[in-house]
Image (tube, rainbow, N blue to C red; front, side):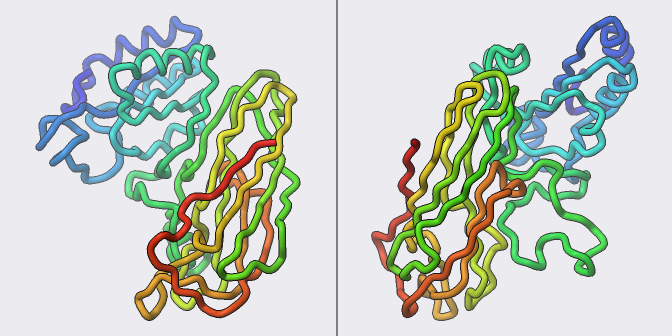
Length: 300
């Protein structure tokens, strides 16, 4: 099917093929191009986040056959997939994977490769949803009374599925109080609870509860991909320097400010089962050049 035109001429053949198959793989997404000669690229904008052309009609028609359907999205932007998510057997998102992308996707679809990737952006639920960042202020996220629209994504930043399953547990913080020029050590245990080898990306988010300016609800400060055999568990330790908790204050300088902080550890920005609290102590410290921007990470 053409991507740019609303051409439905090939849908009937696709439906017939799906009806005679055990599994259907429907590839949708973008055509790379520039200045209107594609659907993704410089000068190729979109009115909303519906799949281009008649691709949504194709997906709906194949899903209606009842054949288990894998939706393969090869795109340059995150499209809204909420209309299909509950009915598709699986969704694979590939952001313009390049020349070797076909082989990589074949490995994932066949099960030869156990995927370990995580989303660098949220996948919108509805066509008007924004492919926005997870970094939002308190009133920028969904809560009763703020808006009648729910801006939360269908799949959040940091989300990713696997052919095995994982569990993250046993959060430990090195201290309940950390100097504004000190370091906090965060330790957690990640276990492969499935029946095949895989890797989980353990993610650490911080929340500033008392900042002098509006601060994000959460902010990713560390992550580690932890390879695990079936049934194996390992500990992962993050060293978080106070510089990672700095922000631009009212005086327009970067500072670390004393106050209550919260740390969350999990598998995505919205899947953080481990929550701990600590307090930054001391006087406000201005942070100049040479600040520590990278956490230390070790696996046990």
